[in-house]
Length: 492
Image (cartoon, rainbow, N blue to C red; front, side, top):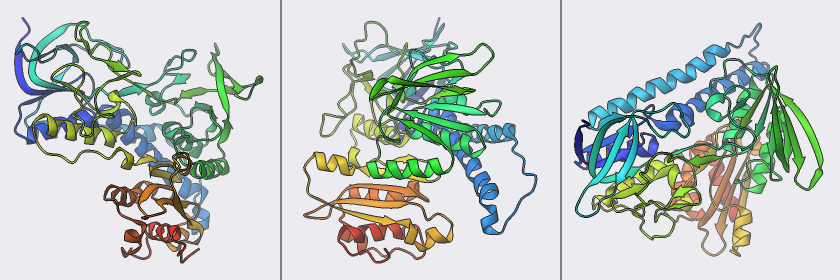
């Protein structure tokens, strides 16, 4: 007979939202369990944020050394790329951090239950929430579990099951020719030609990585510019930079078909969105589908549970309540992270988990400013942004100032060979408060934090201007862009 154990909180999923929420609950003195069907750390640590950054670092080192070394007076002969070692190093990073999460669970006395969780009931009629733990099946994307291992009960359950790469109905993943971002991290051989469908952060990071090592990369994007969520000006600068590196783009095109060839590879048929009569075909060894992610909750609920789903995500109050609790439609059941909706970002999920846990156990918390969550793309050049784009500001009818600072005149950027870039800050015309900030260039993903803090604290451009920035640093570019919003820029 399956054993039963009671907890204050059961967390389902051990990604950035799940494990952080579990640790925070344990810090509050609660008895906590975490159920995870795969590796601790979730997609981010194992198949997303972390291993991809390891790969991108390899690409950046190779590019700087081999392609630009001569500029620095450093020349190389007979440079060899060991593809197996590149992939192996990336996986080693995930193994190290996976062990780190296991250590944190042990340190905080969190019970880790391996298996697929199914929520049988919420907290109703004076009875606790019930969760069944089953052995995982082989379907990593949409698994529903197999044999019952144990039954757990809890006062509350926090769902943090994340999301999985979205498939196209005519291009199902086979792991060899048609691949997801997961597969793209561990391809055993470097492809000669890769077609990437989608030019969001994931698509562009892999485009940069494979192109850096010599793969011919073609990116197909449905809208008329790459990185569609970014500011128009930043998108155009990014496309120009990546085209200069050798990446080919077909913007304003959709993929009509992906036909896998019997001898390997595929034929990709694309269509001009403005004229469906205009089609062309592209031959590729590998096709990477990078068209976003879909919330993952297959087999998570019993048929009678009654959790509300809205637009493919678990419905909570996070978009409607002034102080959201992240509770679902079922008493005692909460949800955070990618599974409740965009933006699909690890740091957003982690913060939601902390807020949800603190509020469910009666602790005061400030909450999340969803307009001040940074988004980053970690290619070279990097792209980072917070808040509204200039187009969105115009559509809202807000009176604004905009400050732009080109890195072509920036001392530190010139010194390190990274003078292609732009810092753009949009402020309210009346008070100078930050509406949005957008960066393309060296260390953009690090620089955006200052602007995120400024926006969160309702700081003005004048507050940034009056803050002395060290010289020479990339951070000075923020100071110059803030000056530009008031027509006071010094170095441009």
